[in-house]
Length: 530
Image (tube, rainbow, N blue to C red; front, side, top):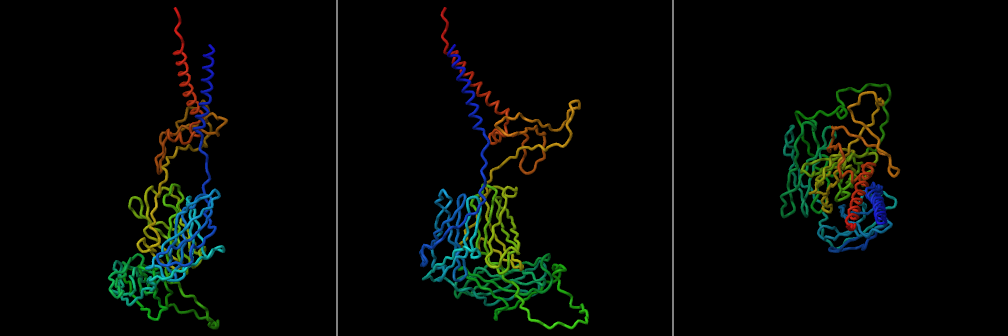
């Protein structure tokens, strides 16, 4: 009998501690606060302040972040105005969040001009998608310069030789085209003609160059089609011409240049009618005579209108793979007017193309170097999992000037912007809306709608109500399950299973242990003697 009591005591203890173990295993996960702090640059210094072709130019940096720093990039301006980037991924995280690293690249004698390079800005991003930028506008910005000597890079900007219109009158649906010739020591890469419409809006005729000769003379056509819905009827006048070569040198021709060549063409029949606010006043309206003597003319300095398109400088997605909804695209540009918006053309995972708009407040922007980060919520249902690529960046300033840059034409130091969205697929559980109807008396017939019952409350868990969901619920987006699956029960723990789930687990475990113990007891009993 003592053995039986001992066995029963062991079974009770095993049953009790087994229930505690199962309860601990199914406990709700601990919530961790997300990292929302951007990394901060602590210090930066050049390893060498003079380099030659083939040398490595390197910046030693330290930065601090609550999580882990993922990317650091230093942008240096060459004597020709071109930007060169020293970028790297971080390493060496310490317990305090201080991280150190080197941003390096090799000097190419064929493309790096001789002269002094000056730090323009620094960009940092962490593993949580937060980013920050340091520029000369920051009071604690640290100026860095280094010299490149002994290179034979092309530092001469391309020069426009001639330009002429193929036709001086076009209609909606026609192609308006400029035939041009230009000369450069290397190879011309991009030519753009900006024409002002009667309303003041700028339209661009752009193209890539072709047909290089031995003397560096190149010819081409800059063309576009006339859209009758957006091109106003009237005379279009050439405002400026922009040329750039394969070495990153660029030049602009404008009416301020003595050898500027004026070009005009007319859009006839069917062009868009400008809104009243853009229409010039009618010259036939006579002025109203007054008895007030005319004011003496005064000389007022009128600033020249901004006719220069924004200059695109850098682009960086905040992470290579996004497993949380926080998405960002960091960009920088230079323009004499504040930017109004930036648009990004994306290739979607299914091969389709989508444009996203980063609208800006021109009043919050400053002329010169402008930088910001486009942020998006990847969980809004418009970002399916898969691989994406940024194909085009379009910049528009507050003066209406537009520049467009594709992955094939932007700075070769900017890496291809390819990223992956890999969000976990979540199936939402059904929710029961609280009812505002009065309580039904027991004598009344039962209702056909869903009923809500309160589950018993255990002291170790919060008060949770379980409800019987209706057989059919309206769906939006992902399908809604009327009963939680086993996977969701395991993920949510006791918060989803409730008191009944705990008792089921305890009873099942206890029954198994009890049956096993009794079986062993019976097997060990000695047979009775006759």
